[in-house]
Structures are given as structure tokens and as C-alpha cells.
Image (tube, rainbow, N blue to C red; front, side, top):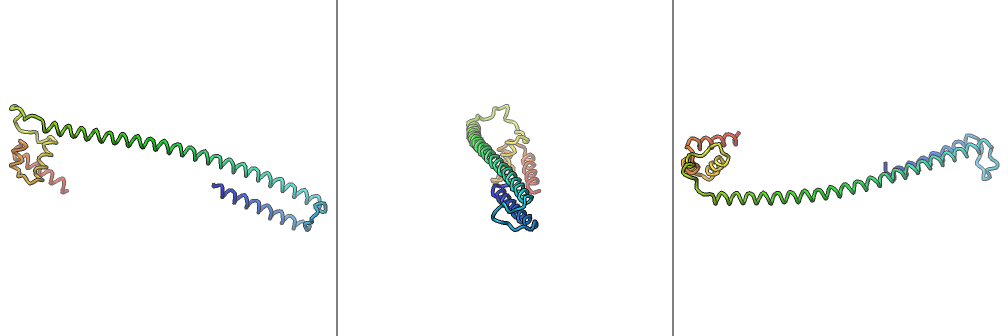
Length: 177
């Protein structure tokens, strides 16, 4: 409950108490006189009790309102601290992410350089390539997209013509369906 709502509720309670006081006075059949000495004793006692209870209720309400205000201020401080902590963590995460991206780019560049600088395969490795290897499959698909014939791809990738056609057909099946 907000502070404004509590103040409105307190004003409403005080207005209700005033109305009740007027009702009590009217029922007693006595007109309110400017001199309290002319009031009957029982009415005077009732009014004093009523006012004393009203003051107690108002004091308790004011204390509750102050407690709620203090709790709200504490919560706001805690939330501000957490927000600043999360902002620090976010900055650290962004820095780590950027460093990881930079490292990944360096690794990719070094791998590309290693592929370019790699010596030609030795005579004993000059046999056929493994068609299940991801890099061979990627090479076949890239060449097919560039318009090379299956025969040209088979020669370049060191595969049988049937293996090249199988890789291309499987790719078409999985990309269409």
C-alpha cells in the first residue's frame, strides 16, 4: 500500500470518527454548547473515551505508516545495490564474450593459414578421401553450389563419383523436406 493511500485511509477514518461523534451527540438529545461544563457527565466521558481511542488509533496508524515508509526505503536501497551489481556482471560478461569472439577469430584465422600452408599429401595418403568427414562433405557441397560437375568434384575431393552424387542427393533431400 502506498503512502498516499494510507494517508487517504487515515483521513477517511478521522472523518468517520467525527461523523460518529456527531451521531452520538444528536442521539443524546443535547445540543452542543460552547461550555463543556453544561454537558452531562456521561456524554463528556463518552466523548473523552472516544477522543482518547481516536488518538491511540491515529498514533498506531502513524507508526505503521512510518514503518512501511522505512521498509520501502530499505527495499529501494537493496534493489539499487542489486541493479548496480547486475550491471557490473553484465559488463564483465560482455568483456568475456568479446574476448572469446576475438580468440575464436584468431583461431579461425590460424586454422585457415594452416590449411593454406599445409604441404601436399604424402604418396601413401594419396588414396581416396573419407566421404563421411565433415570437411570433405562441406567441400563437395560448396563446389556443387558453385556449379562444378560431379566428375570435377570427385577429382578434386578424391572421391568416387557415386560418393559425390550420394552426398549431393542427401543434401537436396534434407533441405527440401
